[in-house]
Amino acid sequence: MKTTVAFRKGVENTPLYQAGLPIDLVAREYGLDPASIVKLASNENPLGPSPAAMAAVRDAVKELHRYPDGGAWELTQRLAREYALDAAQFVIGNGSNEILELLAQAFLEPGTNAVMGEFPFVVYPLVTRHFGAEVRTVPMPALRHDLGAMLDAIDEQTRLIFLASPNNPTPHAVNREELLEFIHALPEHVLFCFDAAYGEYLEQPWNLSELIRDGRPIVETRTFSKIYGLAGLRVGYGMAPEWIINLLKRTRQPFSVNSLALAGALAALDDEEFVKRSRDVNHQGTEQLKNGLQSLGYEVETGSANFILVRVADASGVCGALLKKGVIVRSMQPFSLDGMIRVSVGSSRENDQFLNAISDLARGT
View 1 (tube, one colour):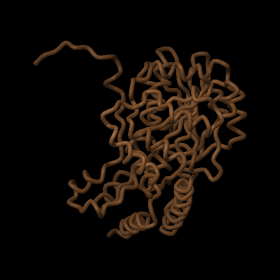
View 2: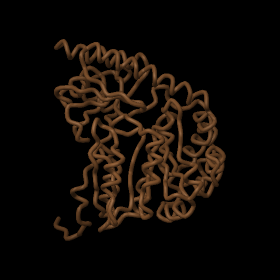
View 3: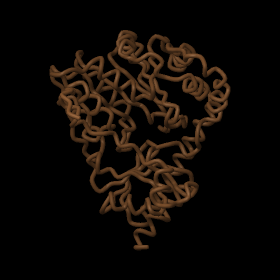
């Protein structure tokens, strides 16, 4: 059947987001027992979900015939207490990814640009291109953000700066004092998006709520997918001056966050013991992976997130060979980090399974 239906120019050239392979798919493809497979590809919490969140979700199931609270009143009130901000300075999203898309929708258009590092979270260039703006990348020497170079990349058409700390796909965090200097040097016409999806993994977590309280054009995004272990619920949030939040709410679809996600997120915020345990397990696991890989002769890049980078001769080949052994990791070739794989920090047992598998590969077995 022939058709003359037109589509928006550029959509066909927008790269697809490539998620980590699911365990069931790998099990079917390679004839493996799903229980024997270790997934270390998507930076998920090896401890599972927050127990407090699971209990809250179970309790919320009986109200599934009701629409969720579109304004997320309880969750925004709780976040306001957490950060000493007003509830009107928060917007809740279907993961922090939705907040990033709302930002692009509200602020980007053809003729404008968004500045980001050359190894950004993949959603930044995706949403920038979706709304016809220029993706302006800045070199990242030693895989770290160059704040001075980012300032130099700004011009009159720059609307947004995207910066994650710790970054993904590179695991490094920016220095807080250097970032504050950077923010104070930004021109008045630029909106700064600070992505703190991995911020809770820092040894001493921090945020930009004080600057938001002062009215600076900053949006800080956070997620419940990582340290809280709620990736399957898809819930995150942004905090910003109220005028920015009002714009984001105008571009947001109604009921984009379901009631189970809202209940789980609210309970997870008070599960401080789980957060501390997750941070400790991540620190121990990072050391376990680093020491094990270095003993095998691999060059390892660690930072402050819940994953590491490993330099290998053939990233795609290594990932494929590990799949056959029931270990899922991520090639960084699609992210322009040739010769590197990303390995999420798992439990001690999962980390050992990965180390044994890559050791076998190194020996040719």
